[in-house]
Length: 384
Image 1 (cartoon, rainbow, N blue to C red):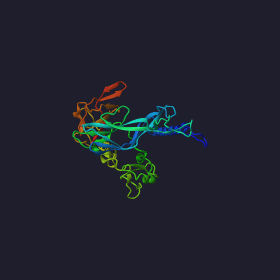
Image 2: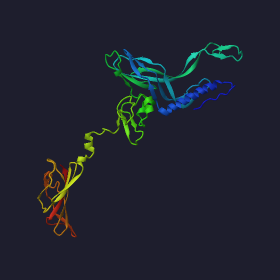
Image 3: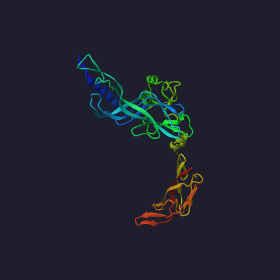
Image 4: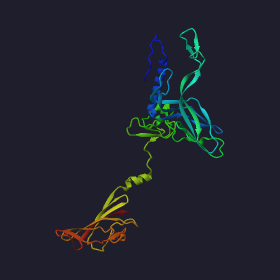
């Protein structure tokens, strides 16, 4: 930020005073741009409350919106079209009358820069120093004394071009008085919370001094534990001045109770459903949750044989025959096409299935038909 330097015994110039004011405006504009973005628009304040009848009151507020340093000359300083976020201010509460006709009305703000507050100023008379001019030509004319970046409020069914929407007021047929429930933030209103309002919402380490300044952490505020990495706390009360982890503190572990039992059962493996396994006389089984995988040997496999499962699956379900392999007497291996749907789905039930497949073996002559293998191993999976 620039600042004008004035020296002792220096003859003050009008330009010096005006340039000092312009430097201040530029500094405010730059910091506003850092908050809202150089091309962004932001609003704060402007609380809207019913007064009586169809009258509402809008509190003081401010808007930051893209503009330029000065569109016209500023006193003796030339206009400056350099882009700059401009701060526009509504200094006093303003009352508006909401139309009584049913409809939705928007309270909007129109920002503008205007030279205001005219006054008859005394001017120095260089020809006769003892004589003071009233006005620049001693003609008693007024001169504007303030360049004001101001806000004018209005209400209408639509927002005029160049204006900023703030509040929406919905009026039903027959309404004679505005209530709080009729007022809501307008679509596109550029309201942003203050830094003080956002401070307790950031995930920062718990700070007792900050809690004292802002009157305690609000409900559901989240803080990091100041001494344990990866541990977080959630406030269970408004105006929370207690210290996380202390006896009776209004804080809970952030991850405490966040997963429901249904979610745990659906997405996680419970201890009582950990994988188990076992054996039976002709094979073995493995069970994870309600999924059972069995592998067992059929001593003499042949077409049309009903192979019963050592352990039955849930009634009404159809397990999946994952695979079948067979061994011939001369130790050639024959891979039998798993007959899940060889003769239709009815061939498989929860208690067993019917073998319905060709028996083949691989040899140097290629794939040839052979007798039934002496045994076949079955791999099957389903629910219990």
